[in-house]
Image (cartoon, rainbow over all chains, first blue to last red; front, side):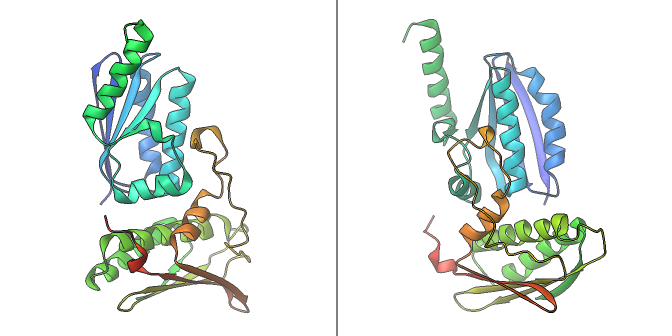
Length: 126
Length: 139
């Protein structure tokens, strides 16, 4: 089993990246390369959703890639949200306190609700 | 399982797959299998990357033994002396993107193992680790 990366940009505000399989020291460079093409698609102020539903395993090498992704998105004023981490990934996130808990969502509905809320705050209609 | 591999990354990943196969056949539960894989990956990758700074060929031995309620792992290598337990725990203030992340893998390995010992003898480094699958919270 290796790593599969897919992405889709349903709107200029949002890009979704799906990770499937294992993200480890053997393949994190493949993710870094894929992300180099994907991140420029996200607008300033936009959102990159990393869907982790099908990611079974992550090691510190994978954490580094996700950390760099978050940093590069942050630098271009975009946010990175993580969706539905599975037990092993969740456990690793918790041990290293890898990401602020507010940016990890269990479901798409929760994530949409959060983004709607942020949008309302920005437009002052909330 | 008893396996001796050269100090190359591709051999590390072959060894990880072998170890996982051994645990699978012994019907070790998936979360403990993933724990063993993670600890093995972090320690072996660290040894391959940093253990042989002079570029020489090295040898790493992996012993994996499954008992009823416990998995024993032993790693021996002829790398430079390195005690993973002495490595400083990285600071973990919440957001990985805003800090240096060196030492993360060793921190993970130490946190996940139920018991972790290091010794250095004439043959090299020796790490002995125990995993208790029953420690796992039910998911």
